[in-house]
Image (cartoon, rainbow, N blue to C red; front, side, top):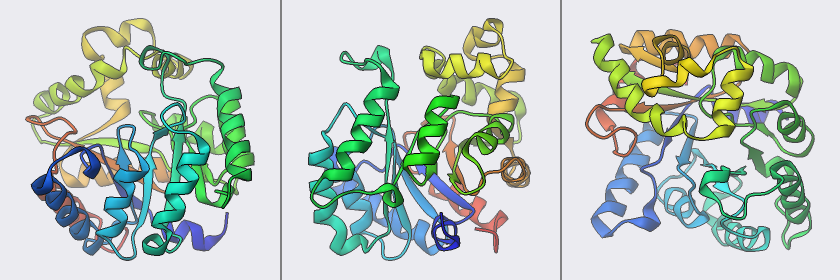
Length: 296
């Protein structure tokens, strides 16, 4: 990975599952377009379209922006074939001009009926992308990687890794596994609330769903957590390790922990008490941009 690639991603980005323009009506699409245009003006490095997006979702964000990097976080390899994805990426390239990055993941067994041999399936998908017309080469893709085998695949076959729901300790381990040359861009969920009990309740509301997915729980067990940490939506120890809770300065400090552990880029997902991660928390995005002024 080149220094230009690191610069293109920036140090801090925004991850949001609300940026699904293909799944909403006209006013909804307009709201997304206005929000991403403002995020670009706020100088966030990368906009991650979360929650199993399609290339159509990415196309709407690309069209509404001019210079910011846009990435899927993460497109499931089970949803669209490599050939379909490559063809759609070629269609948006005139607007993207090289700033679109294909984030790929294997999703989860409980969510995908055909789920089988995820490592082999991802390797085969990358093989197919290498031979599509036009190809989507390693410099244009990144994968969700948690365990050692998938991290090794990310390092050898893509720009790097975009781990989701991980600790700073995992980031340090991932950097070692990836080596110095690969991009490491973990997601970090944020609750901007100085009432710590209320912030933890908001975090638990989001985390409870993910604790039903074995890929995440297996990774957390590898990191030293126990089954008891998964009870009731997550122990305090688990919440404090996975989330940035508090004011903007606390979020900034937690983000620095991930950078110090080896992350090139940190993708911030803002959660709110009323909407979880599903809305467009533009006030919170502005507040964070102010805290990170000059560091994005």
